[in-house]
Image (cartoon, rainbow, N blue to C red):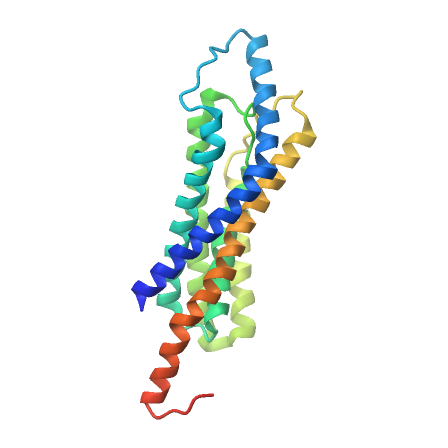
Length: 248
């Protein structure tokens, strides 16, 4: 079953990546272009612009963008498939509910928490000298966020046997919320937005980045949730039938 789930998860990621590319190419890229124009104008004013690009903008916004989204979405689809194979039947949830649970937990820990502290920024925002340290902080926060989610999920799962789902789920969620708030408070603030950078452009970029992530994660949950039914449910039905348990 795991091989079929992996194939379905990765194929679902490919489908979602194409939809996400359509949104990013038509909605997000014009905003990126405006930010690049401002960045080039600022660089020209400072006499610090050499005009050379390692990769052309045409490649970046087409093949590069599509390749990045496909790699990201297909990898997430595979991870979600492995998670479903390991957790199916252990949470007291159906197949689609398990997929949506995995997607929700992944989105909160991998996307929402890190970006609440260090939101996405368009070209022209942030110093090139600090990009290394900013990247390290972001991925460290992401790592600790995932570990906090794993610990909270495990504790909630253990409490479920004693307290039942109605109390275990809020307890696990509360634990993660406390850990996430502590993490965000512990990590240093990084704010390198130029004073003259248009606030409307910055807000539009960050909103579109958030919507793009929602398309990927929500799309994966919807597409893979449906696809996994064709793999998991028939097996469950055959298992019940072979053990003498009538179908519901």
